[in-house]
Length: 571
Image (tube, rainbow, N blue to C red; front, side, top):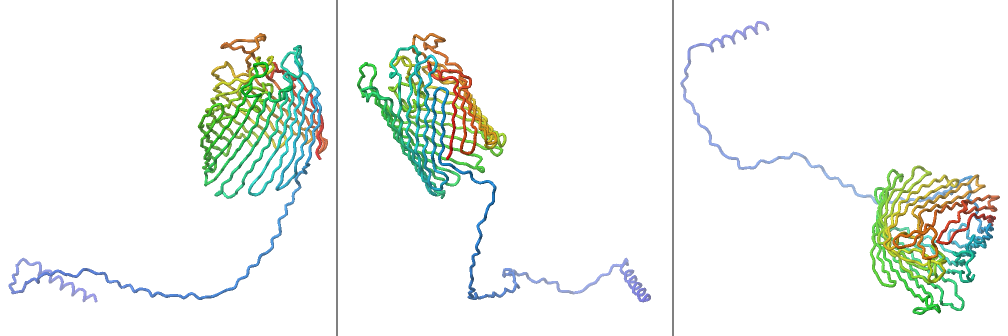
């Protein structure tokens, strides 16, 4: 093998050596160098697919029937064992007591106990006083109130009705005790009887319309003068109040339609009493209100908004049509810890003789009634909770009120011991703060502070209304044996317009008006209840602990310190 490789190498070297010679070599020969003609392929290129398609296999459905059986197992109802049981309800409650100013007190509750369908009951209350206010005329009074109510509650609706009768007697005692005057001339009595009926639908299906319809009637009368039956205040009120709601998604569409009629009469129209001063009054007052609004909420119910209008037809002495804005927004932050809110509202508040006597019972029976109109009320603030037991609210309100009623001393129809009504336009600002604390049913405390600012067009001050008001309420349950209740009210900055020229004490004049300060109000009341058993208890009520005979109205001081005690029964 070695020798064969060497021989092959030598042969190659010989050929290489010949190739490297310096002598040129010429070769002469004949040949054919022709080139064939080119031609164009006319066929288009094609892809030859060599994939073999799969065969489609069909499986026919087999018609098979398998019989089945359903067996329902019985489930035993669950039983819950608890040591706590529902407290027993007693249908009747009676409260009897007597006060230091010879003040008898009686109260009765009788109502249905737990029922899925029916509710009914009666509430009657009487309080009277035969104790005089020092240095003033007879100040005896009595108040009796009775209410009968009943209702039917079904799955899709609720029907409730009530009938009430209130009887109130008192004296216009705002004159010195030395005044020579007939006892009957300062005596007054109001009779109030009425009924209310309301139907509410409870359709759970959100695609259905829910509605509420209420009917009200009320008759209110003042005392009948001797042989002059028609010369007293008579008032009849009829009201239709409806509310319609429809919910679709996150929006709730709401429509309210109210029709309120109030007929007030005093004496005979267009005629004078024998004194040629007391004239008859007939005032028919109708208000029709239509207020559509939309309520929406989103962001997991944290943001809520309401927008709408209140369209009011006011047919009183003249007929007017008003449109008031209605809007409100609020947003919940930090799981209801902090909730800012703001809004605007307005409307018409119907003026009635009954409503005026609820504010000041010592008014004349012949007064001119007007409807109070709130052109706008812009409000806002924030509320929330500091813990599971503490909550708060800080807010403000700026409103424009037209035909706002104020009570002023009357010397035309009385000796200054009755009040007439004057009306004015007011710009009112309220700044309010409140806080509450509650620990179950053991401790409850809440306090409210309000600051008022008034700007009137025709009067110097908002008569009899405070500039600063503080309210405190407290409840404490000690071992469910002793119950303590405290309520306090402080007012400062009240002023009154004095018409009587003979009153010159502490009077100052501003803008041609004679003005007097009514002084500071500090009214503290404490109630104590001792529960001997769950059905029998004793109570003690201490009123006006500061023993301050402050003037609630001009020349109308309240009774000083009072003690009221008694017992209660449940059966």
